Length: 202
Length: 366
Image (tube, rainbow over all chains, first blue to last red; front, side, top):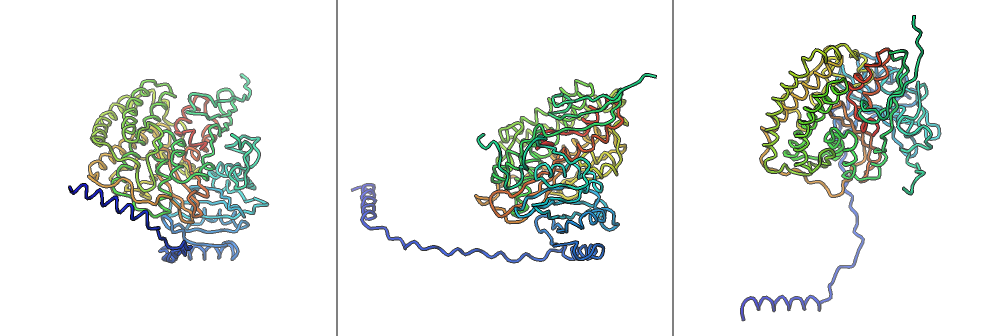
């Protein structure tokens, strides 16, 4: 017998063996899902800056002005303030004018639907100090109103119109709050999470 | 004394000089514009809404359609945002390919602007030259990723395709050719008396106003402010290259032209340096999980696209799809200043001023 034949026989045998033996598997047991606990993030080097900022704001506007503050560790460790809606208009003009802030450049302004409430997010930049902050303002879902900041940053004009158009947040004091991207007669606000498109069949 | 009456004139949305479907309702008194209202939204496709139902890789082709003149930067800003959230390491070779494609795309975009802008204000031949050169870049991209405009080239963790054999040499040849061509352009246009007469001192705005309206890109730098995100907040590997940020002095249309042309030269420099230090071997796509689940949180990243600050605000709830994705489109922000610039201007300057802002309607409407 040549070696090849031998091999074939062997493989044939082993196949038979396999077929005979019932495959024994351990009984299916729900595997306990071990969720890896992420280690708590190291405190950001910008923590002291945040504390300083919060302190300055509370000195000027009182305790209620800032609801929450943290350093967003994604990217360039962005200082983030969650500001009370009633204090936002005052704080906005302070942020632009105060000599040690001078956030004169409105980078971005976005609306987010958080299901239980809306949020308007401002990203401000100071060209003097080369420094960026982020401000969140929570808006009630039943009565979505927030003061407009067009008189402080004219660049906010179209951003606010866009947010009004897509999320239905009213900016009080806006000079021309009309739909900007959607047709004027459009019903509903498409970026809301509970938005039902009219033409679902298409 | 001849009596004039105010008249309402509708420009667009189908008008060759609006570079797309932009409509401007102008109130004119004789030849003078009293009021101008841009009407946008004719190209609104709801990219941000659509993105909420797509996973991150599926969104990339949608970003191609935003700024279709420089799709690479749109691709990049999205993957950059996702990579920032995931804290991914990008392979060296992929970073180099990204910088080369981003800069080539910037050159292509500025060539389109230069050609169409001069066409707008009455010069036909630069358009033909510009498109001839741009075609060479598109051919290079075609070879790299199989598309001329909608590249779909960047991926989270790197790029989709490695450079084919001989591609880098072709890029090098293009750089040498383009450097010579820039001299031709300067000879043809920069010193042209008619062009200077048409654009010097037109559409001027101050630096303060540019900041108020959050202009970015050449529109901001033309007022003398040196703000280029590649220098100020270097992303990718831009901190490794030597280049200047050209700025203007007068804030007029002629300076905008000079700024953009100088930017092309700086981009050529960057590509040249990138080719010189291009890594020989290596992966072009890092190891990323098959299903990308971005951890809960948010981030805002911004890059310098040919038109200005292109930002991406990403909110994630830990799923494989974004909770909210918002693009800060430079064209959208820059266009806001148009009514202010047009007030009191001559009707004949409308097209010149609009062209100077350099908008792409796909991006304005998103």
